[in-house]
Length: 278
Ligand code: DGL
Image (tube, rainbow, N blue to C red; front, side, top):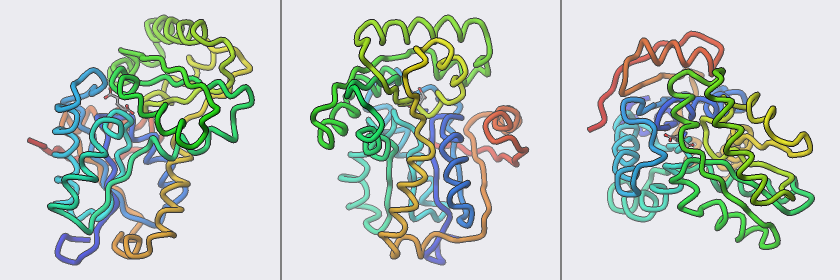
């Protein structure tokens, strides 16, 4: 469980609460492992921050999780996956932690889309940073070059979730506004990727304001399935992930506030500790 034992929990990182939607699915499918979750709530949302800032914040969180003994870290955040994952994998890991691994959420989501869309027109709602990075277009394009991908930046959606306002009238207004914009750009969309881990918390609003024929694709189950598959294909990593079925929650904000909001995501009470990342 500790750094020196050569094995540790699986680290899960998000800018705030959104990654809990991924962690929940991962723990459903892989309950035997230990997990450590970091939410950088004090600095969330990341969605409108620059590439350099998202990279630096994400790198700090990954290093903190490594210091806690994690051999494998999942960036349960599309913005961090889009802006920081590649640099961490190609630059930081080889020079500092060559035997540790960091995985993201975009590739596992892109992989499933080919079997879901019939019209081959797919929409993505995500933070401005993820949309601007064009990461989904690139990943889907490599796997399914025939699919037309239309992105819609949704500034404020993650902030609405972080502020615990997902059920408010304001949420209705902003969800409808962005979905109308997306569907007017491409009315043939039959599948919508929720390309931000916060958005499953807005699911009922998204369903309400989207044509009934459009499939909504949250990521959690696909990320969990892909992690399961990864651990089977990499026994050298799996054997260094401890199996006690525990989960620790760390936040850069107030543990009390995290605990209250986490209840909404996880439907259980959790113990939360404060951590600083700088
Ligand atoms: N939950 C994150 C994502 O998946 C980021 C939300 C934010 O911090 O803006 O993109």
